[in-house]
Length: 340
Ligand code: CP
Image (tube, rainbow, N blue to C red):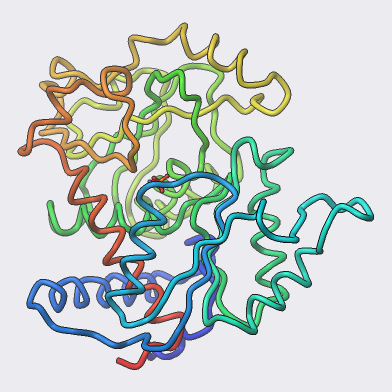
């Protein structure tokens, strides 16, 4: 296939892209990163506009997409839905439909990014459903900037970073482990990471306390991906078991499957029963070597100790955050018909 075959393609989940397409994305992202560092001025998306519809807050995603469009010679527009006519409430009189808003956005832009999750949705899956609905009506690619189920820009950045740092991912072991935080966070980054890491041939060890199971459909797809790639996928309720001999450790909090029934306060109370689920130096000493991967923001002192966060030999997190920029430049250049 040609790079140009990716023009117009939505990126809502990595499950909708083939391994070959994802490899092209990584190649283009790596190339754009090298060209950025060699000081080359690029106008791949000159005169193009990327719309960014943020229902939820962001540090990295907004800044990296915005900087990425500037670096490619285009422009991005930050959109706060409360300043627009759109409503995800389907009641008559609730506001402008998703269909109409999406069709109009495509008349002004060459790509649309959306973030919707956590307290902005009424039930698990609604944010992702909205993105697929937008994808149905949009004349330009829809890019998931984090939904309640998936965060593909993050998970492809995770792969890019791990490949840069440890090389071929086949037979490398990643421990993706629940960690304590009162922030009670969403599932997208973790679910996308296990899906994608398994697709790239890693041995994925998922660990969480009882009661924090991930989406069964995502677990099934991860198992399938591991079978296809020659990797493996295991699930345990023992953090130490998952971390032992791991090349990479990804300690991150997530909510229980009952979040939308029991509410946030109850979630915080439940999470508080597992404060020992923290990535510490003591645990790292059992890994091999247990480099830290994390989508950020990190709850320092809860999810992971400062000692590991601030150890440049162990922590990948700032390079990983930077790679959001390069990965998303590759994604926009490919899907928004960039002039390479
Ligand atoms: N990892 C990530 O998506 O960060 P932000 O929430 O700050 O965008």
